[in-house]
Image (tube, rainbow over the protein chains, first blue to last red):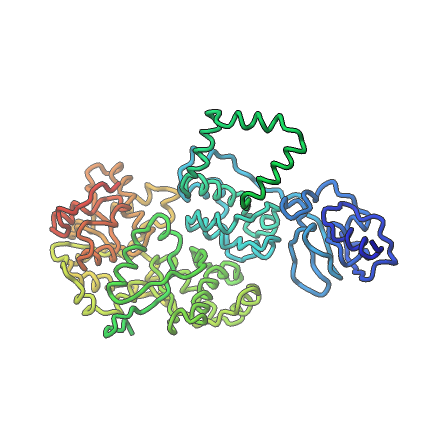
Length: 253
Length: 317
């Protein structure tokens, strides 16, 4: 393996937490970024998260799965000469020249306590726990802030219309980073409200999954105990083989 | 104007439902869409509509509260650009609150191009609103469709029914956006006459229903409701019509509080005009679509032989 490939391999590996062992003279493309107001030159192939680590920052917050799922690494940036404020995930976004960056490790947001088995499947439940959604002025700032590019304003409006399905569909890919709530001039906590909406829709809005019900009953009736016992006693290698074979048997997703 | 009668093709008009029509007042939307269809008009729900803004903001320096209504007007512009509408620049509203807010905001943007430019610049992810949409109300569209056209569709004239129209404020004030003479509106009277109803003159037809005071103090509203309904009943009315979901809530649902305070009070049903139109057009012999009415109009309608006994459904709340 030549030297160049190994550097690129290392850089491309988004799961690698700290970039070490890279010799500056091997890097072809450099960009200038600003982390909390201080300028750093970093390799242009890095994600924001990697670039900050490259610059000497060690994350104890604002970093989680490194795969774009957990929403911990919410980042806000502006680029030099532009008025737009961007919201992105540091682990999913490559650095660009002239970025002014700041991490938002936590969004203070009121989260209501409720029991969906007690609540009625009525749009009023959304207003009961998150009445501030009626303060929406349709400015669309939430949508512009969303690193997942969700149509957040639209789902707030779905909530106001009592459209549980529209709310659930439009908010499905939310990773709860909180940037919408931080930016909202009406101080709405979009993502917690949407979670209530999805929970209500999941419980009352769609037909019960009969296969799941049947399978849970089978498990409770100990139908699979014998099979489980067999698996538990398997040698690790045999278990791995079985797992791989089973994976091949059916489409998982 | 109107439907192409020769081919039976429906005239498409975008309509803005608003929150009440999707939650507490589904009967308003359902009956309006069905009645319009019989009159050759297809009401197309505006895609991706958002809150109308609820109340038109009067403050000179408050542009933020006009963003919501403007976005809705923009959707009509987009529908036309996408060829979904055959050059229809009007946006129909059914709820008078929405009508008032959307029409006033549209007017302000037309009168103040600088304000429009500020909002267009703010909404930088959208195309610019050109100010060409007209906001109209269902009653205006029905009147435009024509009394003769409506009469021609009537199969069961509501001759035996004495109806007092109630207007409230949002369709009539301020004067420059009014759909009719704000001091003496007659548009509902004309439409009720067209479906054969006996129109009862109601001197309280523009008296405030109490509006959002219903949230703060329902007994204040109950007093107003008592006055409005009692005057209408004294004039001989058996039913009230209104176009406004909020007026309907205050005049209909608040009869619960009226009865608490005035035990001798006897209930009177409150309907929207499109509910009555469907009866007159003969497509609602079974009395569907009255489930959300607090005071059930069906016993009255049955007494007047406007519902067929065999199909009659009962059990309104």
